[in-house]
Image (cartoon, rainbow, N blue to C red; front, side):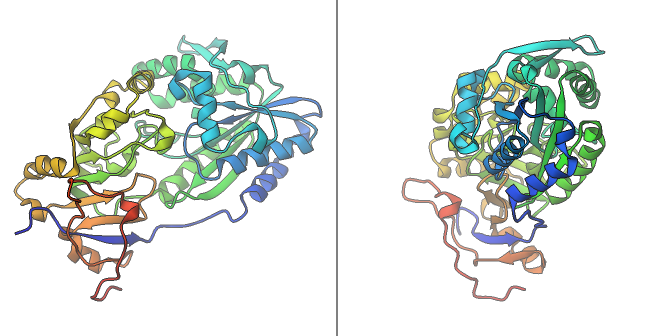
Length: 432
């Protein structure tokens, strides 16, 4: 009898709307809103770029710069990312460089600072912070991805309005707003602050980005300030429809090769793993339901920020060794989510993790475990699945079976390879 479940690979069929010409679409969208009516030659324009790994973000930023320069304006880029990058100006500029957002590529300056200006006090009584460089500009272009938030629920979640709070509020603002959200709803705070920013901070236009389930640009839309709230509701609806999902509704165990801030605000997208409300359980009406999560590594672009690791029950010891404890704690505390920085049970090898976790899954024997294995929560078009899913997978028209079940590929030292290095051999049997 085998000790571990056999695994096979499936390819999901996800919705795939896609922008073919990213730069061209940015130009078309900005031309449509006719910024000449707002932005005059010689005026300065701050463009926000955040810390998430948004597809084509450098091309999108450069296209915005190109459009503004054709208007005769003087654009510059500001990192808009709360406490990320260790809460330092240098760390945030380094994040941009890793995404290809550089002065040389984009053709404009990058002005990175953690200093903010208090523009007013919100109706709830707390100060409204705004990036110093952006506040000093004649205009601001808010560029960001619209998607479901990893913790908050509403008709407005992550997107342009949140960028005006957490992103342009920098570390100071992010601390204040996350505290306020403890006493008020996310929806109330995001609307309260966004309305003050829209009134006082010379927002010229928003550039909303929606991605498909393959981490590709699915839509780009220029949004005028007085339409932010209405359009973001519609864009969020599309983002929910197109977002990636695990192929099955329940799992005893989920192996994740990498987590990171470039993947999600919580390192792993809680909407994908089914832990939006509770760190270690799915709510009764929430799917998928994953009993145990094991994290195998951090992305290179997260620079040791392991925020979200505390939502896993297990990890490899090498993850702890790669973790920048200070950076992780700063980010998790700023976000009001201290448990996200906690350390799971960690083991030297994948074999050790499996030996510890699989006996805990319930009445199913370890070889019969419902186990899923993904690269990260953005890249789940192909998933390794245990043999317990075989019968269901064969009946699913949205799944293409790429291999027959095969043994877990543990090496002599007890490690699994990166999922991306596994070859696929077409199954001998039929699959439609």
